[in-house]
Amino acid sequence: MPIKILVTAKRVEDPESKIRVKPDGSGIVTEGVNYKMNPFDEIAVEEALRLREKHGGEVLVASIGGDRSMTEIRAALAMGADRGVLVKHEGALDPVVVSAILAKVFEQEKPDLVLLGKQSIDDDQNQVGQYLAERLGLAQATFASKTESLESESEQKKQPGLLLSSDGKRIGVVREVDGGVETLDLSLPAVVTTDLRLNKPRFASLPGIMKAKKKEVRELPAASLGVDLAPRVVVRRLEEPPRRKGGVKVADVEELWKKLHDEAKVV
Amino acid sequence: MANVLIVAEQGGGHLRKATFHAIAAGREVARRTGGKLHLALLGKGIGPLAQELAACGAEVHAADAEVLEHYLAEAHAPVVAGIAKACDATFVGAAATAQGKDLLPRVAAKLGAGMATEVVAFGGDGANVTFRRPMWAGNVLAEVEIASQVKVFTVRATEFGVAAREGGGSVTAVPVAIDAAGLRTRFVEFREVKSARPELTEARVVVSGGRGTKGDFKPVEALADELGAAVGASRAAVDAGWVPNDWQVGQTGKVVAPELYVAAGISGAIQHLAGMKGSKVIVAVNKDADAPIFQIADYGLVADLFQALPALQAKVKANK
Image (tube, rainbow over all chains, first blue to last red; front, side):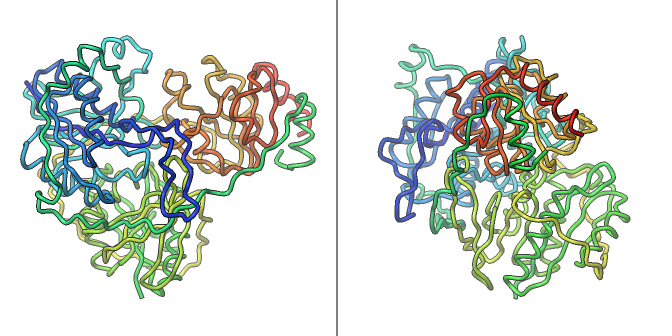
């Protein structure tokens, strides 16, 4: 059964970039910082593409931000997503506002499944998917993963980790939880957030990048959606955590043992 | 005079240790606001656990029902929200476990509340309690305010002590009106990875292995067992399918702060450091002298872990 999927692609600082706090604590230093799609959203886009490849349907990618977030939408389109939605908003966002905006997009597009990264690596809040599910009265499954490893044959074959039922009405999700692995069955439409080991996202091909330029992207101002855009979680100040002092190199296990036993007294 | 509700977690017939760290955090918030501390416990057949929780000196709101037997956010969230309203809670918190992270945002949405995830410290008092939390993989600490009337949070258990049993609490039964047939989520199964070792986030000593083990965790596990330690892993080791996902230490895995953390064959990516840089003493064993892990290790040994770990294990054994 074909499935329509709404997937998110947030623009975030490249995890390899050095993140420094401005001296006055008002924000992070953005000069010299690279940006890319939130790695967890990349996994969500990949999962959406695999589901469409297996069952047919449509993948719609949404991003919320300034003009530059278009880059992340095009990146998802280059991977293979069909269409994009850019909700323009320049100010601060928090999960309450983001989920309110996505709920409006959901109402407009009526997808069968919403796929998001479990958290964005800038604020690490890990809330939007859950908050959105509650707003919409839908089932949620967070930290979606799979039992086969990323080196397995099924991963090489780009099998989806999420299991759509043959009637297209339910989806099975394997989740990474404390102490093991849990399986849930959700009725659609539903919200699923992705964890690290759900899949290895594909690289966009050159033909994919070229096709992406022609795919439709709808732009709309956040203010036009009629949601309250005032963040409830307000960052007042940032600071860098205390640095660990560098240590020493030991010559051998004998010396290491002495240090741990006599000096640090931890063994 | 704002009340605080902490949501406890139970499984396999016992209360999770992380809950007692969350209760300590809840007590601190209650001290800052001058309000009362309440606890919520959900499940099936949880009577004895509710009594055990009551020993923490708070009023325990126990929701005991068939429909709550297996944890499901969809069923748990409305019950917790109901309890929060009944005890007039301005603050609703839990430990940042997999369950806490899955559940509390849904509770927040039900209460129209903003939420701070993985709080490491509180500030302020009265109506103006603030939350300190890590951002950008722990490279930044943010002081945040929550502007909604109700404020929801999860805490990083390792940053708070364990609540002492003070006695003097009570248990109140909460009626549960969730219709199981109306739920859109169905629990299918839970495949537990059992271990005789201490829990990773609670262990005094953690020995972790990474890519350098090339899939052979025996030296890591043998050293851990000699030390009575928990075993952790880098993302690379888990991605490769060498060890269970539950062993991953890092930004999006487990955050640990043991007395001693031994990183063997782990290069020290930022995301891994985010999960262990709060450890008291860090030892790094790696063949590569330039591995970033050496920059934060108290003691660094450039060596082959297949030689060094058994040698260290022998030393530990000989000195017992």
